[in-house]
Amino acid sequence: ATERFDEALPLLDRYLMHHPADLDMLYTQAGIQHKAGRNAEALESVEKVLLFAPDYEGGKELFERIRETT
Image 1: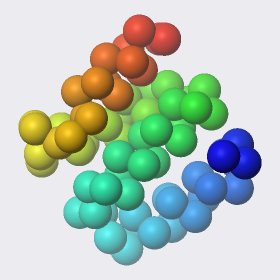
Image 2 (image 1 turned 60 degrees about the horizontal axis):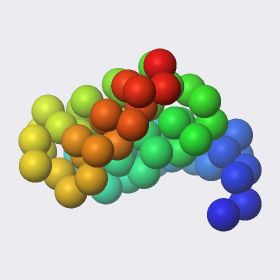
Image 3 (image 1 turned 90 degrees about the horizontal axis):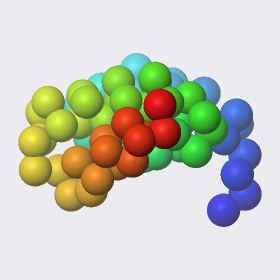
Image 4 (image 1 turned 135 degrees about the vertical axis):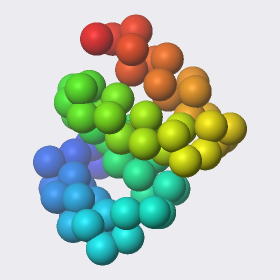
């Protein structure tokens, strides 16, 4: 809600370095990257989620939304 993406992303990056299999946080990271305009990174993040969980709730929709803006 605060749209302070530049502050949130480094924290998520650090968390995911230690917990790379946390698909919920990876999905969150993709959403924040997308909102921050970092669409190439967002696509990469959501692709990882879909690689490990093809039916991840909201994953395909986020993937399509990001692709539409690139």
